[in-house]
Length: 92
Image (cartoon, rainbow, N blue to C red):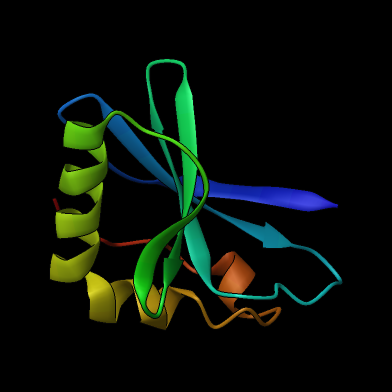
């Protein structure tokens, strides 16, 4: 069962989200980015697109955002039960 966390950030039409699987391990730490009808999944270490596609400009913006917030994203991606209930505080 997936449980959606809040949106982490919104910028230039991009929406960044993280999901947590209740009762199951999340495999590779990652986040999801959406822009209009396009959706992509980005791994955190290293930061790379591992699924889906975004327009090239939007993908570059998302990757730059992830580099800036890398430490915060890794701290949120402690894929244990306690991390699922944390308040998300990633600044734009």
